[in-house]
Image (cartoon, rainbow, N blue to C red; front, side, top):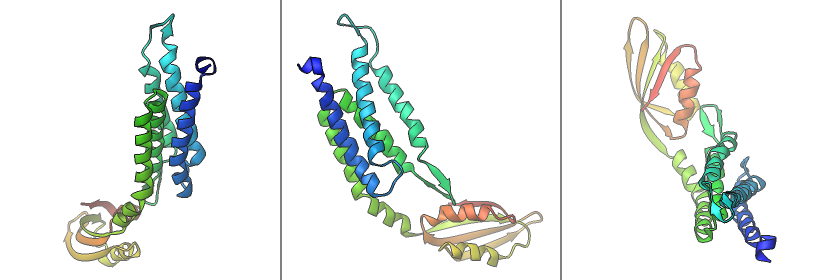
Length: 218
């Protein structure tokens, strides 16, 4: 009966639903684009394809193919879905965690499909703990203030106050400044302090201004 109705495959798909759903639920609560249904479907699909890849290579009880080939295509193919969740806007990149989650959910599905249930359950638990437990820590770290050296190259005679307005509007303060004038440009050597996440924002914002030639934050 187990072989006829493929109860072993049903067990695999059931575990895939549970693990993909547990991870997807956290993403859904967080309001991410790849939520509950997306993660469940990816995990089920990866588990199903892995199970098929382990059986499709047999002819009359003899293996004639490599079962890892189909699983390898899952890993690369799911990258297209992950890429669709990554966005670049206003000097910051969003969706990287969602893309990574999709990738690891596919990996969990492959592990389930291969029959390694303990490993899959352990990985699913760890992923859920990382997503649910470390989000607040990551948020606090990105909002923590840090100091950084910044070099801004501009048109000749560009006033410091114009740059100061842009920086302070984004929560970044100039601690010290040195100005070097050259025939073709003016270079500002600044020491800045502000939230870590804002340094990416100010770089993009400054580069959009016509008088700014280049920005380097180190």
